[in-house]
Length: 465
Ligand code: ARG
Image (cartoon, rainbow, N blue to C red; front, side, top):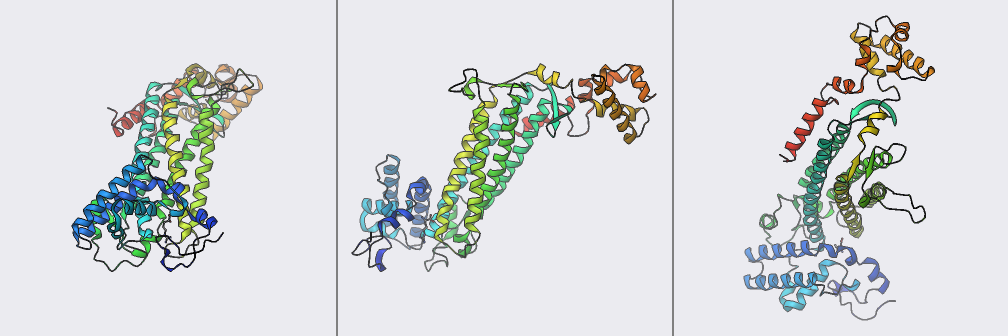
């Protein structure tokens, strides 16, 4: 339905007709950008202070506007402001509410500014805070990984390749692999923070403005590290959103891989761990069930963050410079990514502290499946055989043992001798599980000492001691 009569919107001057009701609903972003209110008000206050300093507006007016903005902030916090599609977005709601607080003088706020640079600023202020929070949450998660690794430092489990038992490793070494993964995630967020931390206000619509803005001063007030250098880029750039969601996607993939492992390990088939009752749920039909829902949900939620990644990239890929309304659509994938990553990190940190580790099950699982075959080859190398030949002899030993329903260490010395004269009685010690761990001393390997040191280093990195 077309509305007749003058258009009452803040931008309505040139419009002879009102906005169609459906269009009003369709282009409003208030439902989701209302969460930017704090950033928007902080940005506006800095803008006003700067304008007063540069005598663009009188000092007294600035005082009134700032007071008014603080009142608006309080009102939003107390749910005293009704949001409506008619006012489109958070920027217009705040300007409108300011007008109601302070009257005509409020109309000076938008001098030398456009919603294009305003929204770019707001998202950056918001995302700087959230990125710092996420880095802290991820460090908290790393702490729980390291604490768990230390608690189970010498627990031995089968290491897998192709999800087939491969060689024994320390369970703590496996956990510390995740420590490394999340360390890279944190580094990526720290790096991307530098590019979020750029102040775009002053670009105005796209070309800069005729007012003598002091952008450096605004930057200082808002605690940004840098002012953006090109006004067109300032309002067109959403690289920092794409980067952030990319890094979040990698982090979620890491959580998802861990989830997959926890789900497998807690199955009856593995029984390596038990996740506490508080982090599992039951079935409405099968009374015996205890399901690893948290891990499953995190694995599932990885899909939505990856969806957000495709969303933002597709959104940006054909946009001409500078601002296009399409860019309003950057917020939902961004906010959803922030929310999802935060809750997943939080819930995981708590869940890890509530996992029981079944040391004996893990150890027993190392006894079957010829996890010591590589070590038999290494043993033969230590006796002077070339590795390729030793590999072949160890392979024959596996074939023999398989044929006789045995493991390698069940073979008699005579049986070993039929394969190689080099094998002596000391082979049995060599094939013991603990010994296999002990010998993996190459830097970054799973030896007891290496892992102990890795845990110590991580504790120092995390300030845990
Ligand atoms: N709500 C808009 C957004 O999020 C604010 C910028 C509007 N700019 C404009 N020229 N219509 O992108």
